[in-house]
Amino acid sequence: LNKHRYNGSQMERISRAREAVVLKDARKRFDERKKAGAPVDDPPLLNEGWGEVTQLCAITDMAGCTFGSIMMPTLIPAVVQATQMFLNYYPYIVGRLHIINCQPTIAAIFRRALASIVPEHVVRRITVHPIGSRDIFDQVAREHLPVQVGGQAPCDELIPPPPPPS
Image 1 (cartoon, rainbow, N blue to C red):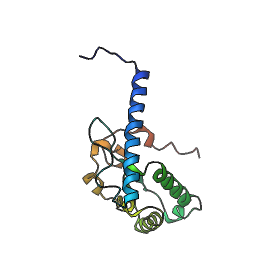
Image 2: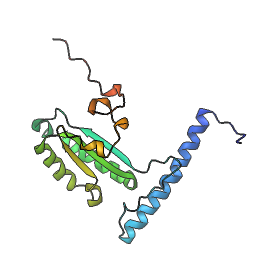
Image 3: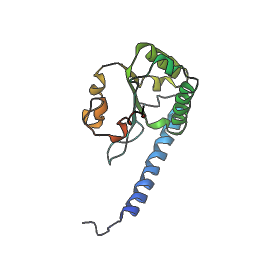
Image 4: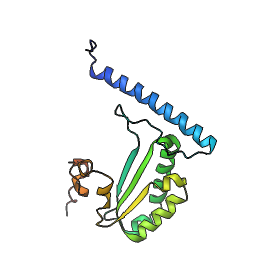
């Protein structure tokens, strides 16, 4: 029986310290594999168990995105910058990127742009799902996806704001 009782602030500090140790170890193994020319993503760099996040999964919903909006001069550089930042600081926990509800032309642009800036092992982890596809449910459980994209998790942050007054 554990005699120690921790308040929320103490538990948060313990959790952050533990996370720092786990990530430092993963970074060390990533650097060792990269230096040796070994695959950096197999086997996974973070150990399973104890509730660690072993890999991050990002989902981008492209519903309503048109070819014109993709070609805006700020959009693609912003995506490139965010991707590079993620890879620079967290390359050892890159999981999956799902781009959902994507028009075919836009999918081709994203594939080409991302393939030109990210390593091959990351490109293999990017899945582009066409408009109306339900393939994402084969890889992500419905209870972890927002209702707005066909899942079961409530997510008020994705409710669109009311239209501006006429």
